[in-house]
Length: 270
Image (tube, rainbow, N blue to C red):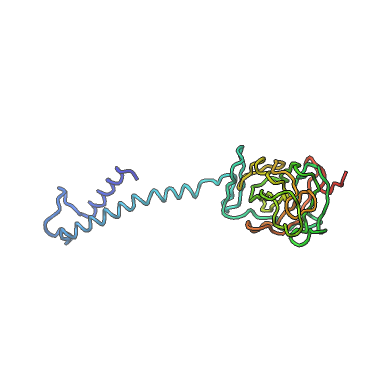
């Protein structure tokens, strides 16, 4: 409401209440409605307060209407699903109110989660598979790929960086170093996560990722190493079920697509 419109409606309101005579003078005695000059002053003051409140609140309703009818960016549905946005600058993703609905059927060994590329582009070999050796419980569906220290590691599919660690040396060790490994942890558009463990110390200075960074499929995210609980240099990879952002969740069965510049996850030595 403009100042001109405010003055117009104020005068209309005051005149309809007969708060002043045609000459604009406040009568000294009671008017024809029986109000004294003091009562008329009170009525005029309340009328001014009311009109001022209307003038202040009405733009807010107009703004809310615009927000309610404006389209959501990045193809949002209005139900508030998560959308991860990447730009040429690998910008931090736009997050909405609730996670994207997941597929109704959970991944199984017979029907594993798909759409992942080889993290070493076909290099290395499988040194430990699912449900074998130390891969039990939470890590039952993880893979270990033997590879020399310093080999490039690539994102198996696009997503954002949840967290990373880069402070432990590449001298391996036993179970006592179970939680002392370097890693990159990504979250993907359907809520699943992928983790890349035992990375080389100092990889962060080379790839310069940060929390919230968007990475593309096949983008360099680190270098293989020998940090943490490890008897020899290798890359541990796993795909996790959606859940808490505070800790790793249970792994799920997943497979590597054969058309991702690197062959199968089960590639043998040599």
